[in-house]
Image 1 (tube, rainbow, N blue to C red):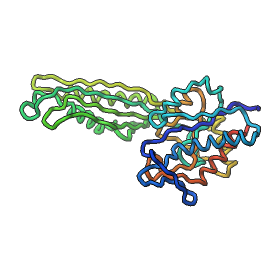
Image 2: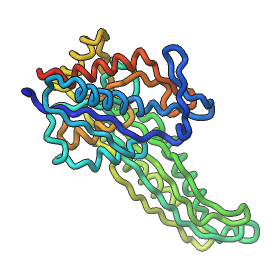
Image 3: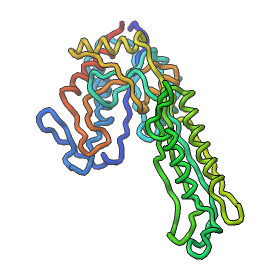
Image 4: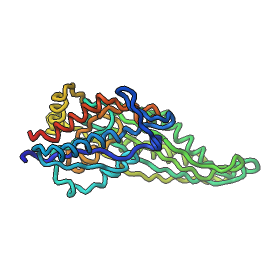
Length: 319
């Protein structure tokens, strides 16, 4: 059938809090029967929307443009499935639609980019009671660096002039006993911004803060520790134009389903980040998930039905 190829996708994985979920329905809401587990509607609901669309197409044999269905893995831990998918397998789609979290009328047309850092601080161990001055505390170095970042506005919600981003020191590991000056600390951190250049600036400031802190902590003999920073791009930012065919098609389908399109920009990463890098403009749509990654997670079935309607229209409309 005529029309450019379209891609419909969702990710199959959930977060650990959803392990053991037993869905139960109460009126128009689905939640986990066990209050200690999340539902996993992020993104089982997205998988259900796309799989339902594929099965209905097979069952009803209605005309439709060329379609590709993609279910990715490891979205929650770094968008690895979308990052590593081979574009040659997808049939060169021109429009793509990704079902993930939120209301059915939500169209995520832009997302931030994220960079992940691993920082290792090496100090020098010594007895904390008999000879603390002979040691170099890796924890003290880390503390000074983090305080530096906070004091100068490079940690948390970052505003520098008209530029905006975020950073977080998320994991700190180190130390084995209170009577030993800690000689090694491992840190995992991140930086995000919609502006790639400003994101690189945030990363540079993080690295510089740790480099300065190393020079401030010395042993009684003048020795200093050392720090190494390694990092990688988690996902690049993107922003789709309002006139992008995928955006126009998604908005048209949402209106046809009786809802008002709501364009959104997110400060988190979605599979669409990497799909856009692959040259496939991708709009992310919701399907009724509420409170994702939490034990109170729910699925609104009325919203889910709208999402199924939107997906059907996007799969069968050849315009």
